[in-house]
Length: 182
Image 1: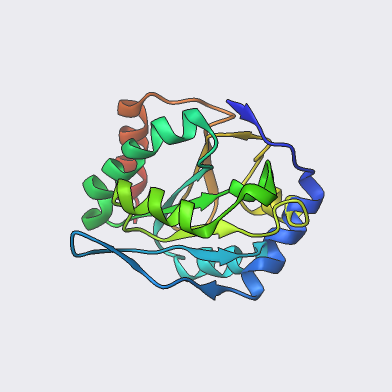
Image 2: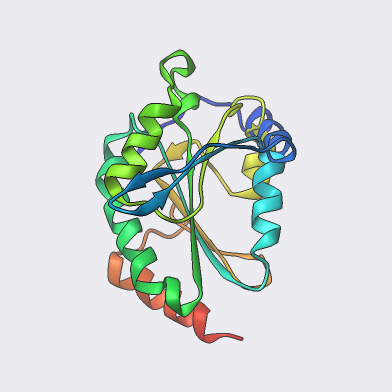
């Protein structure tokens, strides 16, 4: 895991504020499949999560500069393809601006998402340091990425990768258990 140089309180507040003023990025087409990303603050993410209430949500927090994140992302895309029709909502949260903000470009993130075929909701946190506290409350401990978390249909966090690492087959079992609950 790679440590993210952010302050938890600041990140959470910024994350919630971002969600309030969500700006949509034009979709990028990859083989006819729409791939997009939305630059957000924490408040925008909170709204996006609330819009999915009643669904099981799997969240992947990653960055293009994080080698382990890049390596794991194709499995996240495969998980989406496997379970989307069964009701799983996959969402990715890009933290590219948390390490070296001046090196962030939206185009770099969009290219990565397009190349991976990430057709689920993708978000780019634009003020990770300011939103650290709000992000921590909303998503979990983002001090080390890659980080994944799952929310049940009621919006309660039921799993986080930093608390209980799971192998791919164990994650599939947890997803299936959560989807089976009505």
